[in-house]
Image (spheres, rainbow, N blue to C red):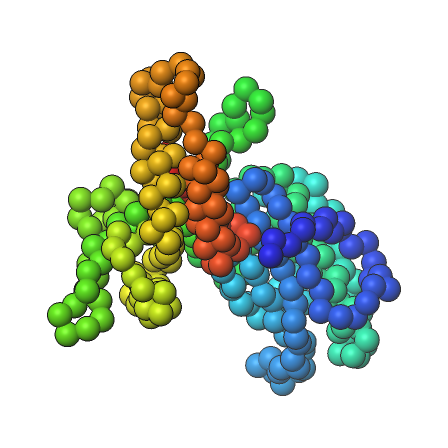
Length: 313
């Protein structure tokens, strides 16, 4: 399910919130969803033998999880570096150091909450701008492409969407998968990429993770659907949509080909006694599209881009 974003203010002092695992979600722009959590801590020793607390940071970014281990002084160094790049951050690091009892369990647990809130507030201070390289490095996220720059704002003042990153995930949805699927002579299935499809992996070259959702273009018995779906997902990152033959006929040949296609090609005649609109075909179209949407939601996570193709969907 899609989690609601929660705004987290900069921490001026350690507060009395619940010591449970902190989670802060920030939606810095329409295309960016990032969530932080500090799930655990551990006591380690530096080169001189002095103990310190290491915080395990989990970043949910563009539908993927990234892990980083950081100590308090690294948070302070991050803040000092970000102040020169991000306006609106306070002069001093807003989480109190507690030099004398920094290893006390209650201090470690409260600091865990405060540091998570700090990360969310620092990201929110970007106001949708490009994430600084030092913050990416701190969180151990993939670095942005060298030519990635903030797009100029349009007339409304909103910045244009930025190029895709390697950490992005795009879900391509179409009536047909860019595959050729057929039955093998000895049983099972023969699957290969359809080089003629504009949606095949070589033609797209998106430079990020891609998943496909669509039909397979051949008859599949209900008891074979799960096995074929597993083959396509594991080997081709494709999620098949299986529609009953009767539904496909009304959805594709009925509403899409007989009604929508003429409309989109300026060939629709005025309604008369032979009005081409058919209620049953419309209901089939709606049911088929719900099936496609349900399949998308099986793999969708906040931050994924869903790209639906052609007039069938």
